[in-house]
Image (cartoon, rainbow, N blue to C red; front, side, top):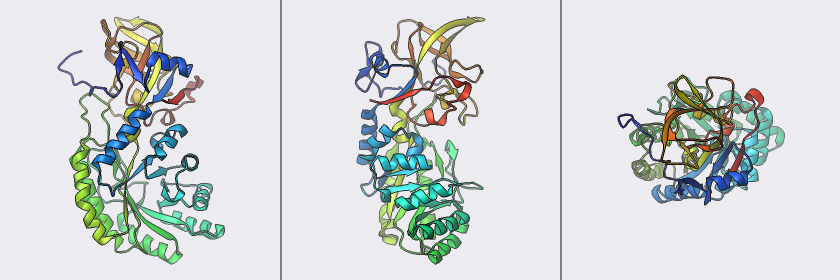
Length: 411
């Protein structure tokens, strides 16, 4: 590989024994045999446990840690995490059922997202889940449905701030957005919540995702707390909840550096007494998704064919963008960049070659690795895509071209 080109951050979270990747204490070859098919996703519970434990050590103890199920809603994974986090955040009725099945107290489950359907709202109200209101119309609908059910709806206001999280992968707040209520409209909404007699919980402020710069997160948290304290003056009751979102990123592409969470944690520690003095009952929630599970997952495909086209070698695999849209570069990338990829049963390999790994779909978009240096590969070898624990299978067009489904395992 050309040393002048930026390279991926070393993927050292999975051990390598006899040149074969180890996942969940098993060699990749043994795991593939146990799964019974390729392609598959595998999530290593040890890595998830270590990430949660590390955050618990570094974050102020008063910070509550929630898992955003949209990052990876695999039921076994959610159930595993539910025993370690303080709450779960959902974005659909199906995710809500996964959260409830995992045994999480409904009072510690929140439901966010625009365009919630009446059946979803009814189910959340009946379960006692906190609904994050996204519009004035949704507020009126929630009030009417709660009245019909004879239950006081638990609500928080999702605020669309008047600022954005700088350098975030996806901006979820600031400017004109479909998410949340514009900050300047929130006082009017709070007054209406009081008039309707709903069970007001607090605020949800989320500005963006996938950020690797601590200074950007610190600035966002500063502005979030300042805005929340201003809005609290108009609250119809005590503020019990202050969800400051997440936005913690992981390194995917060449040149990416891991996020240094320590200064972010120190800044949160600085804000805690300030918030406590104004909002003594408020729990501050950090809602994380990919940062908890993203680096703990891999996507595994099998090489079905090798071909040389005008001097360049292509490896044809049995999985691709229909299972892992993000790795193909078609999930938000402007310029396609490679995820970290290795030959899982020949991680280092004595012979190397520059190849392009493609899937079985009849489209030029089906690329998992473009002109990457990998160990020399034979038919039947296993290609591994790292950083695949979040926004993988459920963020992909699995029905495209009607290829066989992919399995998921937690090991």
